[in-house]
Image (cartoon, rainbow, N blue to C red; front, side, top):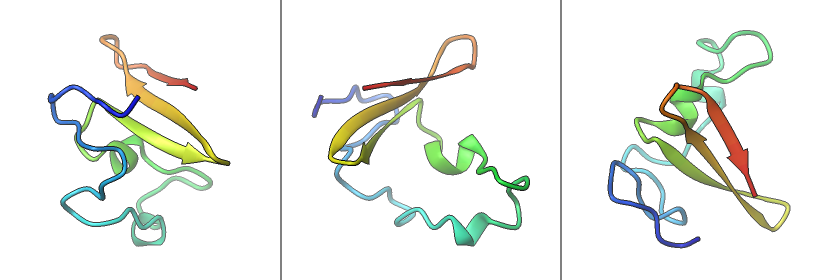
Length: 70
């Protein structure tokens, strides 16, 4: 799971070029209770999320849907 293809995706353990994600930074732009997917993905088609010690992949499909897999 450590290798991610080069199409706009980076090392999942490295912070994006724009810095770490700050949910409070974009809280005013988010609908109540939600974070826009663009904030999470930051132009990528796939990101890796570390949650409770497990790695998950959030990716955008060809039909512009989101899929979360463990």
